Length: 359
Image (cartoon, rainbow, N blue to C red; front, side, top):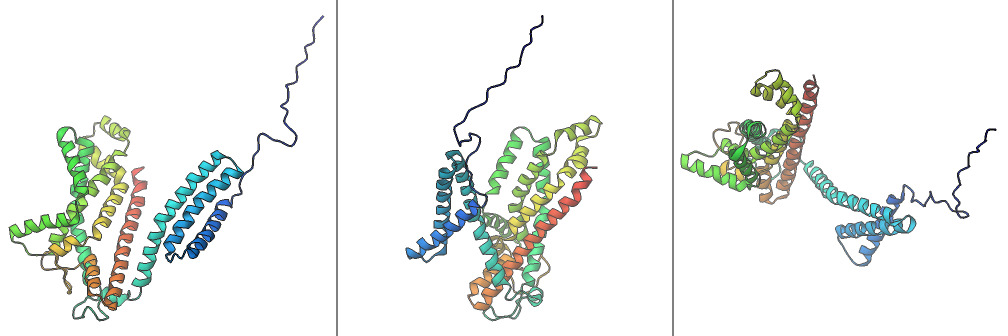
């Protein structure tokens, strides 16, 4: 006779009436927006009631209230763990806004004030024969000077920075590589006036006259460490497997670097060079020492004084008239557009080169 064994039914968990241990209260998705609206309203009310005239103070009060309200409400409705998460998220948002709002304010001020005189005439005429305190004139001579000086500085610094980075990543070992890395780090923090004084001393010893080339050499000193650092990091990102595969086929190392490593990292290298150009495009001190500035159009960077956009902005602001202020803001807008165009070109080159490296 066979025994029949019946399966036992598993016991079911018993919960109290009306309770579900797997569910809890949650704030709606629009809760952060509601916290922000309440915080702004309270911040404006507290600031106005306390007699604070600055909107910046109102914004800081609103930001502090936003963090506090988010934490208190979340801890009350949900739990302490979610409240800590909400607190960290609120702090991140507040820091983001504190960084973005001044930038947007700067861009808005520059665009609104610079558009007053920015037109085709302003871009195609110089200040020759125009008194600084009167309306008229343009920025053409300064734009030419900036393009030539930055272009010469790039021609000098980009090859030096690229080759230095290749040496540090592919060949550099021992004391020499450490010394080069150390001096590159030191040069990164050199003030622009020091680079200008260095070239000025050479210029005085050699008996050279002020020119756009002298300013470009000072700008190149400031540009080289940025190019080295950015290029070095991009070359380190190239997988070693690519190098090993090429070397296993018997390809010389110099050819591996030229045909494999650099093309793979060309997008990042180009972006680094453009960042270095943006770093030097707004420098004024070396131009004041070595180029002297000019109201006339000088297309020869190897002879005679030249102007530049940063020098032009400083020069017009120094005049102190309403017309000169308008020209200074317009030149600042041109300088921002110049840097923006360079960054767009760098991104375009990086995207254009990216498919070829995968073939």
